[in-house]
Length: 474
Image (cartoon, rainbow, N blue to C red):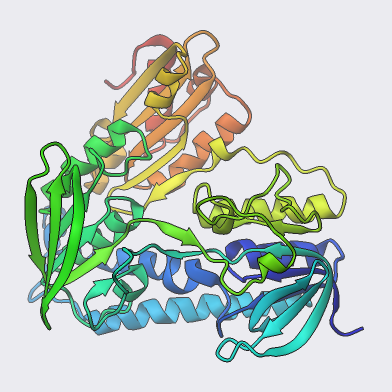
C-alpha cells in the first residue's frame, strides 16, 4: 500500500530529518511530513544557519575594521554591502536545503508537503497548508512528532517588519541596518543578533528582566560576557520588566519598562524592537486532541523517559517537548527514539551533557553543571579558572578575552562542569563533553598531551589547577 509506513515523522527540522534518515538506515519504510516548501525547519531556514552566516560575515567586517591594523594589515575605504551579506546567507541556506533534499532521496524517504493531523493513533490526515482541506490519508505503525517551536510574543503584539516589532525570523530578513535596535531578552538569540547589528553600526540596547544576561548559564560567564559586550558599546539593562511597546510613528518604537526593585518607569526609543523572550511549542492543527495526547500547562507535549507520548506508538522530540531548545538535543532524541523503536538499547539520554553555545565573539560554551547548581546540592568542589590571555595561541590570534572554568568533585576529582568564553569555544567544549561522558577526572585531562600552541591548552591548565591548585603558565 502506497501510504502505509513503518514510521512517519512530522516536521523536517534537525530532529525530524535525522530521525527519518536513521530510521531508513535501520530498515524502516519512512516518510516525513513538512508544512513548508523547504526542509530543515527553524534551525536551517530562520535560525541557527542564517544567524551564524551573518555572525561570521559581520565578525570579519568588525575584525577588519578594528583588529587587523595590529597585524600590519590596513584597508582603504573599508565598507560592507548588507544586501550581499544577506544574499550570501540565503545562498548558504539554499545549499544546505538542497543537501537535506538529497539525503531524503538517497535514503528513499518519502516527503509530503502539508500539515500532518491525527485522525487515529495509526492514521494521519495530510492537510493543505492554506485551506486545511484533507488531501490524503497516511497510515503508520509509529510516528515521531518533531514540529519544533515558534517565538513567544507579548499578548497584544504581532511580529511584522512593517510595524518594526521583530522576532528572530523578521530580524534575519531585514533590508536595512537599524539605527537603534532595542532587544528584549538577554539570552542566546538576543546576544547573537545584537552582536551582528552592533558590528554593522547599530546602537544596541538589551533589556533583560533577570538580574543578569544568559541567566541559564554559569554566573561567571554572564559577568564576563557583560563586560565584553559593554566594551563593544552594547548597552545592557538588567532587572527591568517591559510594561508596554508602542509604535510612535512609521520610524520609531517606544519601549516602556519598570525597574524590578522600585517600580520606576523608564523609556527607550529605537527604530526597531526585537523580542527574544523565549519560544513556545508548535502543536497547532496536529489534532492531538483526537487521540488524547497529553500536554503540560505550558503546552509542551508530555513524554516518558523513552520519549513516548501518552499514546505509546507516538513519540515526540525536540522543542515541542521542552527542555533545552537546541538542534543537537533534538537530533540526539530522534536517534534515541528510532533505535528504541527497532529494539536496540541506546544509552539513556544525559541532558546534563548537552552543550550550550553562544556564537558571539569571543564564543561562549558550557556543558555540565554550573557552580550555583553544585552549591545548591551541597557538593564540595574544586575550581580551576585559566585566563585565555595567558595562552600563546590567544596572543598570536589577538583574541585574549575570556577564560576556561573547570569544576570538579573535591573528593573524587570527577569533572562536573566546564564553562568557556574564548575564541573557538564552540569546538573546545567537545573535549569537556567527551571527558564528562566517560566520567574523567581533572587529573585524567592534565595527563593528556595537548598540542601547543592551541586554545585547548587552557583545558589542561584548568585541570592542573583543579588537581593540584597550580598551573604551569600562570
